[in-house]
Image (tube, rainbow, N blue to C red; front, side, top):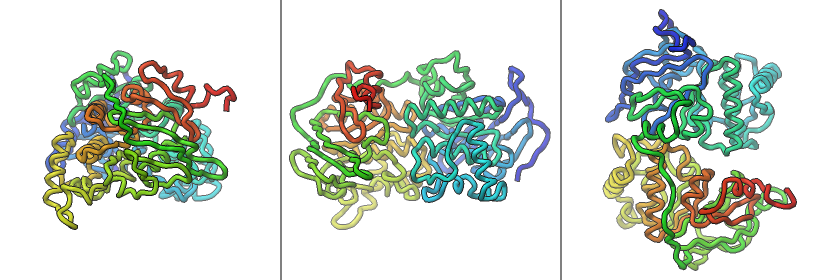
Length: 519
């Protein structure tokens, strides 16, 4: 339960604006690691406050403490000038704090209304009064989501708006957003920032965690930088550049994905010939896909999400079988091969959704490094899993790929998002695949981890690996790719030379604005 005491001092910032949140001396220890060490944070009321830092720097832990998910070992919390003790999210909600986690917590088989009122039925019931309140909040803050729509039918942007609606519905005046733009396309990011500015104009306070420094500089009023669990700077976005922020975060300049000299050979590693996949009604999810990737080549696929990228990856990995066409791995037809057969044939896979397709969150790290490679050395001895060898291999991956963890025995779910991603990439790269299918390989990771992942992909390319790269990050696509294609409504509609293409040309092709018929 929340307890109040005398106002914490100071209760306002240097400019006289009252503080919505003040954390002082927050320390949180876990076995083998100090997640937060004497952290201080001052958030002005009615502001947008960004928290940036490397994966594993302690940002999410700090926000979980503010939301009552975890208790600090040391330090104090003050909300609106009153010292509070937050022992649970219920306490935080009563104090006016709401949190939207990076991975949405929605039931696809329920409507928007049902998701919003779940657990808060006493506020406005579950009928017309709740529906009217959702519509009122949606209209007031410009987040127009129909209350009776089924969540399964909605896109990522709408799902995020539902999560924000959930906390506003419960009366939150302080919103915590963990990586709110990680899964959004640029247009959705622009819309989200419009919503955040609307919340701010209504006197609400927004705290958000992000790795995307340009976005932070665009929307934040104040920025706190955390490194290795400690506050290292509080900066005004008007006086700092993305490059300077990166140096504060990781001690180095912003990385560049540039691939340097070409390593493309004549040896065809992966080919798709006339691949088609049926969609809803008469539409085709994939429509006549032809592409070839050579050894030493990175082929990038650009496109607005939902235009067939995910289905293309799933066809290559054997998760879906095309209705027509063929998939060839070094000339061998793998169109009807199973996922296991494709993996054993030397195709590595970095999935778009690491939680759904990449990890067992409750399993220890050493068990996660076996996934997809459970029939291959060093994980097996005869027909049985060789646990000792698998553990030794996991320790090697953790060391080589800078996965920050106190032990290989901890669960994958206990790692930060960036360290989860590095574990997956280490697992795939350690098998020296012939072809790597990389779907959004740096989504949700900080600039340091992003640089490391880019370097790994470039090094593998130099060694002759063929890479199919799907990404929503245009800088990543243009910088890494040797060949760049655009997918629109399931068709490859444009080819570009990454060395000369402009963002405007890519954007026009991705939206269809460059087509004469305008459709």
